[in-house]
Length: 276
Length: 337
Image (cartoon, rainbow over all chains, first blue to last red; front, side):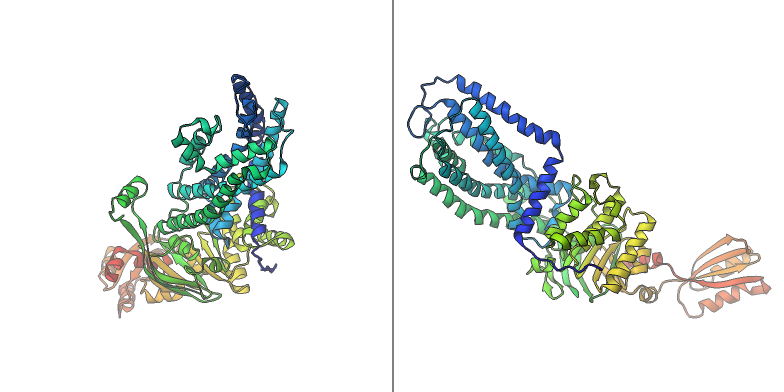
């Protein structure tokens, strides 16, 4: 060949390539992309109307003071997007690869499975972060009070949330590798967030069994921390939630990657990598 | 160099709920054997063809070598690296040119696709850009580089798979039906690229899976005929012609042919087929002779009987199709057991 090459296998370059691919694909559907932003206004409006039905004296605050339901639900809706992104993006990346026939070719490249699967969520998380910011700005226009935000606590909890939820996404991708569908994952994401994690109502108002399930979900601890951050509560007050997320990330990340590798190997043995 | 030693491969015969229930209930999931004790050794700089009918196991063998599936038994190495034990190291040495034209991101341009796969192959920046320009030129798609792949024809996508395979400059390349759906001119270009540029000039080791006989015979140093999951013949095309005792074909041209001559010719020991075709020169007798001692002499005597007006007599080279039919026939399978 006329141009000699010496490949350098830097993981970050591969992460960047996957991010760029996902961004180009997403932006190639301008209508869909624009609607995903416009829908934010609709979501905030719906939240505001629902909140207006709740008596203003009802307490929804983590810190104990009276807080309007809109404050509670807007923060939850804004940040539950991270769980949705985590559970959907990794699994969809696998599913899309099966459908488009690209999965086998990608797996034939000298790229490790952890890099491949974890990179497939980077664009989705970046987009979610931007859309969450816009959601909060729109919500501020409707009366959301962010004047007391503890930025450090908020940033720490966003980072911990991504770290703790990504393994769930990797597990969802493992499932997609085996069952070839992402529907059950999406259902699990929606139901767990809406019912068990206290997105619509405070967790303490649920029966103890549901509270126990909710306690086991990263999203519950993420929302606890993020709501506290918007009320100006310092990191120390929600350290328990932060530690929970940290431990979950440390335990679940290697476990989920191990399971993903096992799922890919099973598909290799069965010859079903490209099946859909 | 590449080796395949005693490789068996089977796939589950049932999927979905059937497999799940069998697995849960402790029943064995039935499997379909697709490769049986396959052995192959390809030297550095050698071009070997895998030739066989659809479903013979050619693509499975390539996928095994490309780490996309795993063998039930056996060992494979690429440049001394065990494919199963060190898949990442093996993948740094190989590229698979799949025949699946869907294997691109259709919303991305050809350049963006190649940039993506180039990055996964370990390239970046200027070297990647130069490499893309070089590889895309080799498949004559330079003018389409900034078009979305979704708008490409099937043949263009197949040519793009070839460009993609070249990106990382691997030492071993696997081509799975590289000229499928490609027009004759570009198919010839791809064959020339594989034979001359990759093998003869760059010294790459190449395996081409194809069901095109002429392609295998034209470009390959050796051809492995694959049938029902087994390599049933292996060798240079010329040796395959000879070793497999292909029938000899002769064309005898006479001014006229009568029924008596045809009947006498048919009775010659070793004549397997006889066709009579009228031509500009007269009448052609196309005779297929099995390689038996004295058969050719008997044919000569038969056609010159009673001073027949013999206008031409020549041997016709056996065609690859004869060899292919012979080694992939059911009788051949039975003989192999």
